[in-house]
Length: 230
Image (tube, rainbow, N blue to C red; front, side, top):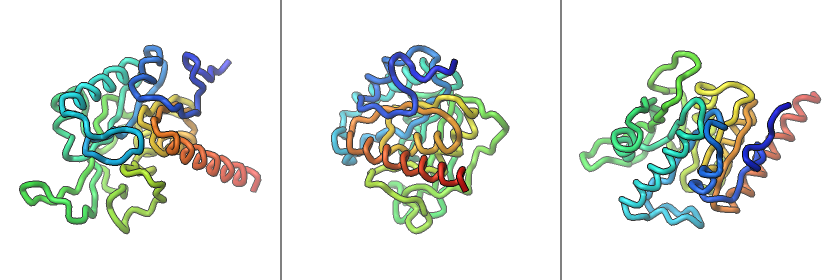
């Protein structure tokens, strides 16, 4: 019999819970992969979450998130981060991970203090790829690339690329496995998991984002049903 719940949580559902609170309720090694794009503590407006913690509080929060994520995952964890937070996460919070670079063809006029235009995002992974993959992905357009980013946006201030999310899930998990995202936002991880034949479980503080995610999932299910009937 296929298990459709984890400690009372129904699979293929997003729960209106704090990320850390939700993770602590998940038993050890009960999901296959944890993937998330975390808040960066740069004062973005997420509606209900205050993205302006003192730096030590933010680092403590992220450390706890990563510890719980490692505890519950069988394969490991993948974290999607920007270039500014790469050093913090890799050197201090997740030193055992390996980086994958997502090359950005366009980055507008965002410069570092040294006037270097940053053209990359990073995925840090502790999970083993199912097949050998390159450490640079140069065929994915991501949020922030202006007209090059063709995906629909849903009012989230830091939306993750669906194509990038699908690439991660395909690379580090198998069909039928469970993907958990503790910062589900508007449901990109959930949509990617459903499209790729995986199960998902997520947590999100903003109820309005969950409503958007549920609409995205329902629309995708309708499209799939129409394709199966055609």
